[in-house]
Image 1 (tube, rainbow, N blue to C red):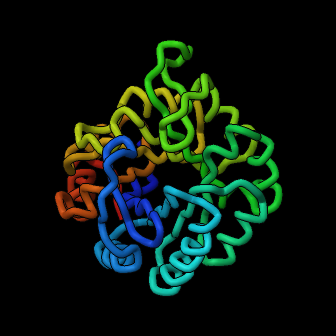
Image 2 (image 1 turned 45 degrees about the vertical axis):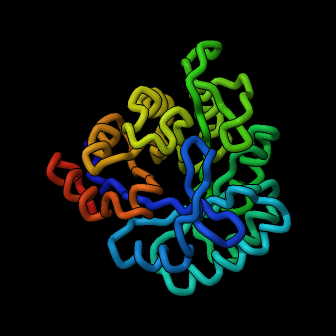
Length: 254
């Protein structure tokens, strides 16, 4: 077992300056103000925060910069921001706004060279590959990369893609299971295990958390960090309960 602490990361899906959450990206409902939630999570022991701009239109981008700026001013844990990142200059602007790390997804699938360009400019440590994977018998690993919030299949094998992305320079992988997303039925352990065997960079597991107990098998499957949204936003589970469950199973936590 790694001596590094397993990180617990709330995810704020931001749309037009508000936090939203749905099931498999559908049926979005309001979950609160991102600054208030971020401050709460900082106080309650979150190890990091992830902001995903779920609409990421150019009009929404300025809203995101403003939210990132204001959050970074009052929260002192690492902040990862993603959604609609298409260029090196997008990364530059988010880092200047106060992000510690930036995640890329759709644009990197469309043009993998983007990973190397960002890593060369800013270093791998700021670059997270965000990946929405779903089960697909057509792919050798059984998992396919999707884009556009899980709605569009690419035919690209998800496990091959994360291995390639690591070689291109990503410093971390945020692996979201579309099949499990928002279901509260537990993380996709098969997906986590396959990804863990394919890459050596830190692996963040996302999608499916419904109880504090769900986090333990995901850590056992190889996740270095565990991300959740609705169960934290709506008060179903606390960060403290998750860390207590992990610690009780022998995992170091902060």
